[in-house]
Image (cartoon, rainbow, N blue to C red):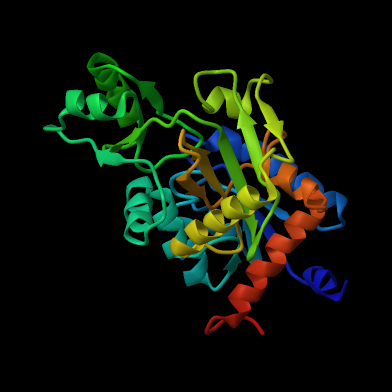
Length: 315
């Protein structure tokens, strides 16, 4: 394939690690990405962004495959740096990365466009917790800007709510309370303008937390997801709308739940999803007929094409 052959002429760096709470996940993702690219005949430069002034080692890099997760790598910071250096980066741009990382802004924007998402509130000193729990029954308390369910707790009492806020505050001062939805969870991987086959997640723990995502083996993943053709089309269409509403591009993952009335509710968008042996995007890609290497090459190609169309880009 000529397009893929063009990648062979590019100097590729893989950015990973960083200093966020998701550093360990990023290291595992990088191992997967670097291994697949090397097996595919590429010679990527491996760069741990947790090292001082790592950007000084980019040298003649043409495109950086960014597999950092969390603050610093996924929130627009690295994206802005690469843009200033004139280096292509994989995935969403500065705006899309920043919006998707901010769960509060994401939900506010979706609501303004009429896209469905569970009720939410920014936790403040005067938040009436009893009133919230009386209305919602139970809630998720989470940091506004963090991923991998870090600092996230399900609560159904005022005492538990206070403790959950203390846990969330470890990852940032802004804390979001979100109405608990009792229903199945789905995730839709996005590649360009295409939704890959949705996955239904069945966690045996209280919810799909960090342990269930990366360490445990009891979580079940269902693909095909068990929805009717019509419902699956609706799910994918909603995921694509939510993704593009935040100005996200190239690749990512949209997480949703289905409430008791059968309506899908948006949870969040991940602009740099995990690539570990537990991760969902490679699983969805396989179901969609793509090998891991083909998935990575598509991400690189789409990103390079986007970069090349920008003023000052290549080509």
